[in-house]
Length: 583
Image 1: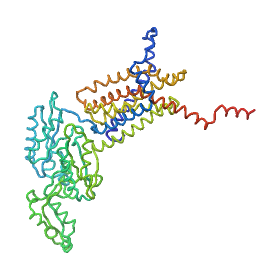
Image 2 (image 1 turned 60 degrees about the vertical axis):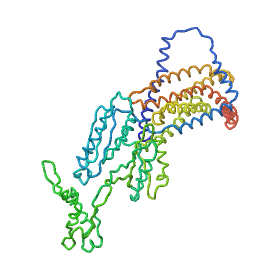
Image 3 (image 1 turned 45 degrees about the horizontal axis):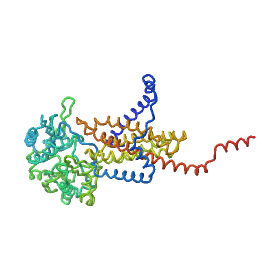
Image 4 (image 1 turned 180 degrees about the vertical axis):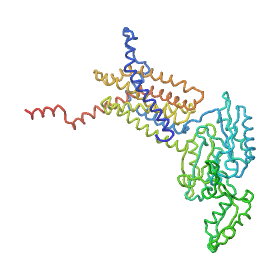
């Protein structure tokens, strides 16, 4: 399984495999040794009979096999239908003891502007009853304004304020965010959003791509507007900084050609005057082992004055000079503060937060149904990354792992039972665990994600174990001369108690995890809830359904094998004919 989900399932598979191997060694070596020393022989007790209710239900199911199979099939499809209302996502949102607010100020904001915004946000967070302390940070640590990162206010327009929460609080982090969200909107001149604690980003992110960038901003604005109308999705916003004023220098091709001024000369003059020349061309100051580039450019006031920029001198082909204004149009206009690319295509991302109780899968279904995505403009595409990509990887990877796991179980059972038909009986018990797991997740308010799917894989082994106990004992009874019906009744009488005991022991072991409320319980609870619900239904249904399926499969096998045996040359005949040839 690829991606982040694969890391979880890989660790789970390794842990379970090693644990089962050690359990096998203990069961085959240590348990008989301890039994030989500590068990005391006792007088055999009278043979126990099946409970009256269970015996009547089992006899009715065996006498009405088709009706039992039809009821089981209907129950299975009803169980599958429970997937629709289940919330779906990658993993449940945690409840950490902190939350972070990301701050993005307009381009050109100074450190004083950011300090004022951070102070307002810090005061608001500190006033919350769950607040313990507040930590603020201004600046991203890197410059992004020009070559070499020498823009004066580069990185100052972003910041983060982190609220440390009291461990004894009653409110969850998601509820605190929902309470703070309208209060943060009242702070002017800043884009404020919450950072996801698990992934460091928003709850949902939709990426639009374009080869040329034409129409990308319009599509992004339409998507942002339509996402804002969806229930459960709030604070839709683009990831790129707000547009800011920029100086545009557009060459006049005819005049530049007439005066012999190249586009490279125009670009060099504009670059040197505004952001400074590239490091390879500037002089260096040697200070010990360091070589510090000396950057020369116009003062800040001059860079904001179009008349100064227009009067920059440009060399011509004849050796003279001319003004920049004579060979290029120079003007201010609003432009993107940052250009992003995804797989070499221009992209624009729209992020949004999810309200308490809304999961990623449900939110994606609502967003994909929006008109801007169902009928995308020409040249606009979709890309996925982050949690959306992880959710797709989880779905595909789990289905593949589930099918491969069933195939491996079937092959092992074929080798153990020496039959291609008896393992089918065991496989038929696996769907009995689906309904209970889905119903338990729905009643428990848990989501279908990584932890619950791990629980599903565990259920496949537990449900197969119950079937193996019944089928193996029924086969042994038939070899001893019992009829088919007698063998099944004897297997249910002898194996019902061990099946129920092991299932109850497993459910008891999972119960503390299902009821846990401490740190990290959000991840463990869905797995325990799915396992407990699946064990209940698989234990109850397998004790009735497996004997019914056994009769169907056994009758079909007895009907088919004599007909297939005609196609196989008996081994005894081959040996006799070979002996005749030798004599």
